[in-house]
Amino acid sequence: MKLKESFAEHRRLWLGLGSVLFVIAAWEALLTYVFPVNPFFFTKPSLIAVAFKEQVIYGALWGDLAVSSKAFLWGFGFAIVLGIPLGALMGWRRKAGYTLDPFFTAMYASPLVALAPLIIVVFGVGLFAKSVLVFALSVFPFIFNTFAGVRSTDRLLINVVRSFGGGEKDLYLKVIFPSTLPFIVAGARIALGRGLVGIIVGEFYAASEGIGYAISRFGDTYRLPEMFAAIFLLMILAVALTEGMRKLESVLAPWKTTQETR
Amino acid sequence: MKRLQNFYTEREPSILGGGFILLLIVLWELMPRLLTLPQGFSLFFTTPWKVIEACYELFVENKIQEHFYVSSIEFLAGLGLAIIVGLPLGLITGRSPNIDAMVDPFVTIFNATPRLIFLPLFILWFGIGIWSKIIIVFIGAVFPLLINTYEGVKNVDRVLVNVVRSFGANEWQVMKIVVLPNSVPYIVVGLRLAIGRAILGVVVGEFFGASKGLGFMIATAATNYKVDVVFVGVAIFMGLSLVLTMAVKKIESNLSRWRPEEAKTF
Image (cartoon, one colour):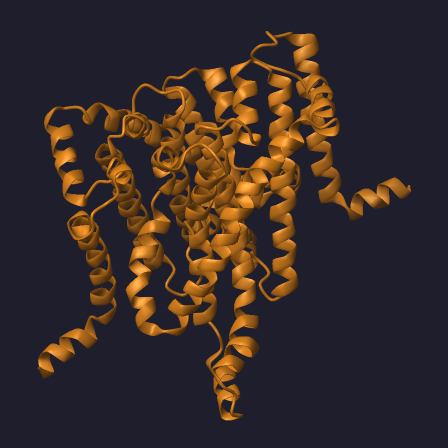
C-alpha cells in the first residue's frame, strides 16, 4: 500500500528510473541471448560495469581526468576573469557596447573549434593549447550574459543609490553585481558545455593524456567496455556540473522559473 | 557639420561596431609591415589578403568544391534527420506526462554531455565515411530541437486547449489548431541552436578519420603549415553559421516581438 502511495507521489521519478533500468536490462539481455555480437564492435552493461570498476574505482582514469581538469580550469578561469569585466563594460558604457557587440557576436556565432588544428600546431600538444581552446569557446557566454545582466538592471535602483549619494563603487557592488549574478551563473552553465567541447576536441586531436585521449585510445584499440566506462564517467561529471549550476541558478534567481534554452 | 553629426548619431551603433571590425582587419593586414615579426612566428602568420588569394586559387583550381559539397551533405542530412526525429518527439513528450517522465532522464543526460565524446564510437561503428559525420551532426542537433519544442508545447495556453477540446476536437486537432502554432517561436529558437551544433558536428567530425570535407581541409592544411588555407576553411564556416543564424534570428524576432530580452545563446 505504501509503495502505491509513493508511486503516485513520485510518479515522474519512478517512471524515469524504470525506463533507465529497462533500457539497461534490454541492452544486456539483447546482447546476451538474442544476438551475441562481436565484442570488438559492441559491448554490454555487465562488461562496462567491470571496466568501470577497474578504470574508475581502482584509478586508471583519474590521472587522465586530472590532466583534463587542469587545462579546463585554466581556460575557464581566464574566461571568467576576462569575460565578466568585458561584459560589464559593454553593458555600462553605451559606446563600448556598440563597438564590441558585433565583433563578439560574430565570434560567438561562429564555430571557433575550426581553429583547433591551428591552435595545436602553434602552441603544441599540451596544457597551453587546450587551455586556449577552452578559453576561446567559453569566454563569450560570460561576456554576453554579463552584458545582458548589466543592461537589464533596474534603472530605478540605480537612481535610488545615486540620490542617496552613492558613488560608482556603490552602484557596482550594491546594485549591478547582485542583479547580474543570476545571468552570470546562467552564462557559466552554457560556458561549461562549450568548454568541455574544447577539452574533448583538443584531446581527440592531439594529446598523450587526458580523458578525451583515453576515449579515443580505447576506441582505436577496440577496448569498448573501457571506452564506455570513460564516456559514462564524463557523462556523470557533466550532468553533476550542469545540474549543480542549474540549482545555483534557481537559488540565485528564484523568480526565473523556466529557461528558454538548455 | 551639423548634418554629419546627425548622420553619426542616427547610425552610431553600426558605425562603431562596423568600424571596430574593419579596424581589426586593417590592423591584421598591416601588422607584418608595421612590426618585424620574429622568425618562427611568420611560419604561422597570414594576412587577410593572402587568405582571399588562397580562397580564389582553391576555387579556380577546383580544389574546394568537393570538400564543400561533402560538408554540406553531412550538414543537411544530419540536420534533416534531427528535425524529423526531434520535432515529433518534442511534441509527444510535451503532450504526454508519462512519456515525458520516461524520456526525460535520457534527454537530461545526453544534453548535459558534449555529444562529441561519441565520435570515436561512431567512427568505429559507421566507418570513416560520410555516415559517422551525419550521425554526429544528428545527435548534436536533435537535443536543442527536442527540448525547445517541448518547452513550446508546455507553454501553450491551457485555456485555448480546453476551448478547442470543448468544441469536440480530438488530440490531433488540438495539436494542429493550438499546440503547433503556439510552439513555432520556440521551435525556431531550437532550430537556431541546432544549426550551431550541426556545424560544430561537421567541423569536428571531419577533423578525425575523414578524407573529404572542409574540416578535413582545415586539419591537413594546419599540419602542412598552410595557414592561409586554414583561414579559408574557418572563414567559410564562420560565414555560413553567421548567415544561417542571423536568418533564423530574423524569423525569430518577427515571430516573437513580445518576448523580453534574453542573453544571446548560440
